[in-house]
Image 1 (cartoon, rainbow, N blue to C red):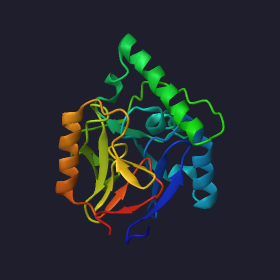
Image 2 (cartoon, rainbow, N blue to C red):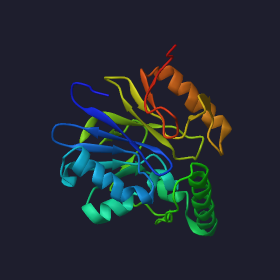
Image 3 (tube, rainbow, N blue to C red):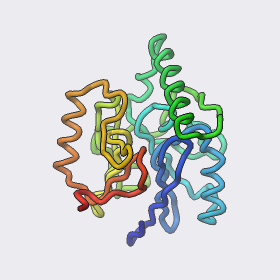
Length: 225
């Protein structure tokens, strides 16, 4: 998609969709991808976009699951790219129960990869994100003041979405998934009442475009007939 200030490139990750927002002088990566996506992302940016990796100024992460945070920390270690993420993201996998949840979520991502017939790759990653920038509801993304974080709990407690108000673009991560042309809730929905509130908020925002982390199409026109 092309807009006046930027282009949005669709990057098909290992088990998820990612979006690369390319400006004239900088790049924003939405979401944190999977560990196997680190090298393909680098190749895409440097070869397909013909841009130096230093042009990537921010990894914007929505939540802590392996397909949404697994690449961000490794990319930062290799290339120095800062991470913006929910302020409480590292509380999710805290302690012994959190470690078990981290292992469970990693195995679930492995199952998804097998279902998609993706080649076997290591998915394990550091469960602590340690974001450089902590995001709250309505926080503006550092260096990208045309995008803001929207608190979107339901799938986890700390989920956020990313919204560009000028063009009505909303990346909703796992709040909704597209399965064979049908919009469905993610698995699991750990906080159903909060998920209902999130869906009502999306309806109130009335975005023009939806970007989904899991779907057969990269871009969806809201209320498209």
